[in-house]
Picture 1 (cartoon, rainbow, N blue to C red):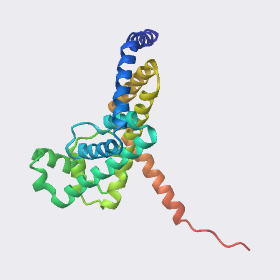
Picture 2: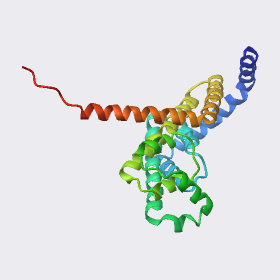
Picture 3: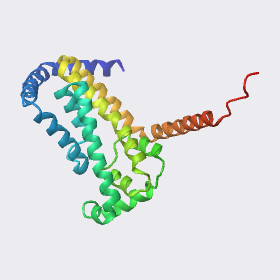
Picture 4: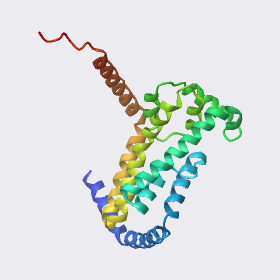
Length: 231
């Protein structure tokens, strides 16, 4: 363990100078993009929504870019706005146009396989599912289901928001921290991300069981009698 930590520390020290140069160049690009005025956030929101429809880049990667360009508050707001627009369009496409259109863009066997696996009505399950990366087809399949959109959309937005929050935080820190801290941050993020991906099934199960227990407890509290009036 000590040797591993020493190796990581040596790697960070060795990469500090080139990363410092890269961050300086990226800072110049960042300043130029921000100087374009309102076009920069409009373009970012549009691209964020479009990547949900056609998925050229992962949303979490774009969130890092948003945090780097616009800071934590503005980056988070713009990313969530793009997510809401893109997810709404995807769910409406799945709900209104359905399989005939989707079979033109996705393999029919993939659609059938995910439909069988995702016969879900509970928004809680959709929330837990979207906490982790899933194939692009899954959100379209969610729209094809029977869960009311007024519950499905918030569940997906909440599930996706965690990854966006982390990405924005990382991007904002990358713009402000010195190179050695940026490197350490990315190493830690990759390690934690790898562990979360490796153990996503037991994590999902644990979250789902405890959220269901919490929901039953809350329902029991609201349904419980208020007690007899005071004498």
